[in-house]
Structures are given as C-alpha cells and as structure tokens.
Image (cartoon, rainbow, N blue to C red; front, side, top):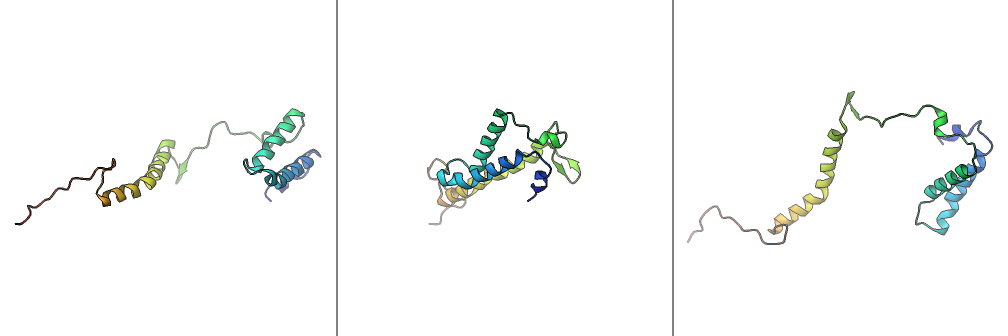
Length: 126
C-alpha cells in the first residue's frame, strides 16, 4: 500500500507493467517454485523495458542517489563498520560451537574423539 501514491500521474505504460508483474507473481508459482516469482517478474519486466526502450519512471527520477553506503550510527556517534560487524559475527559463530563444545566436555572427549586424561588433584586413599 505504500507504493500506491507512486502509481498516480505516471505514464500509461506503467499500468500494464504493474498488471503483468502481479499476473506473474500469482500464476508463476503454479508452474514452478524453484525460483521465487517476484524475482522472475522483476527480471522479466526489467528485460522488457530495457529491450523495448520503454520510457518508464525510475528510482533515479525521484532525486539524487547517495554516492556512498550508509554509515552505522550508535547514539549519535559514528561507528566504524568493523567494530559493529565483528562482535555480531563472533556471537553468531559461538551459537553452533558452544553446545557442541559443552557436549564433548560432558562426555569427556577431545575434539578428535580421544578420551580426555583425568587429572586427580588428591592421591587416592588406600
């Protein structure tokens, strides 16, 4: 619904393209679900508009596009990208490793499957 205002006061060729996109997204999944229908409709309509040299509105017509990617901001301060990405990556890496490591430790096994040698802190009583 947010894109409805973008369909007001545009060239007439936009309306058949929108209808074709909806038709592809509704009927294409009945034929195949290997490739997502929205992806196919975007690719097909882009190829059609470029190949037929159709003059349709583009994103660049709405204004100037940024020349660089956005910079992460935390509480009004700019954050270097690596400082924002590395902790998240390490946390995601720990998710599959931590349960495996805890299971191996509880079974008394090393990573390669050999048993762990137990160290007794006190001499056994006789």
